[in-house]
Length: 373
Image (cartoon, rainbow, N blue to C red; front, side):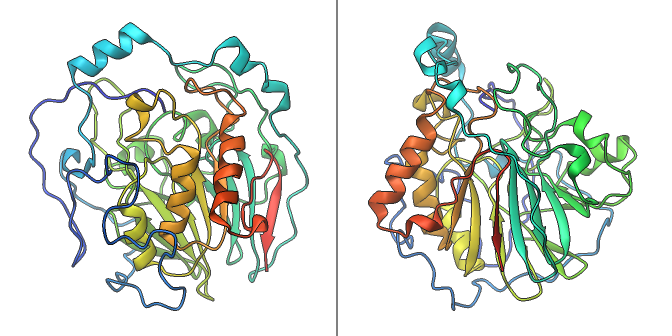
């Protein structure tokens, strides 16, 4: 979301990091470019071995005990009183009338879900960060938001790309963090309570209160398996907050899903640009597709630490070493001040400048699908 946290009080917490992984306190270079030594445009070789080695999968739905908060995982400081005063003074959180004029041009092309089998990977963009991901014979929803409106935000400017009734049986759900545009209670109430749900550390209790029975919460770099598909939780440059008193009480991140044949899809959730992308690429070489956010980035001084702009998203895809990129987190809710069509125009231009194959940018309309076989 575009809302930023206010100043936080004193907290003491412990972190869990995998061997060989540090948790830097400032992960986003001032220039918005990779830090020295990152793979940059080359990324890791698809044939490289994971470094460090991947963790053994944890049991599904195990009971975990976590620190009270995760402020030490932030890679940029939360804004203080000076930033909040500037935000209140400038108040540029929505596009100008000219920037909204292109709403009728936002791409919307719903179609039937593709036929798949256990050897097929397919993605369908439902809008914002919500995807119908078919992998390893499973149907997985990412950050499902089928509601017309979320708290504090104008109604959707494009309809949901996939009718709820058109969905096959949902085998699993992955959640990136607890912001309202990624964790939508009305949508989740539509699911059977025994649906497997994979969530960040500290978020299981939210689901347990709603009687979900198969909730697996993971720390960064941890994994679990469901019917032969591996779910790894990976870092992101973001934060969490849902009420006035729960800033960073649960973790935030993205997911890497790997099928039996080793093919991988990275779902970034919501994130700014920074060092984590190259580290994810080293640990999960050969990512076939990354789903990356490209919208909700203006004003830059306010949102740069937590939301990629289009050029940074393309750089992140390169850092990951991903073969393909599908943009998301734009064209659904008006969350910030950039013109509504600008993210698409800029991501296409940034991709062209890299010289990467045009067909590897999956800039889908809402409701459209692509398939890997």
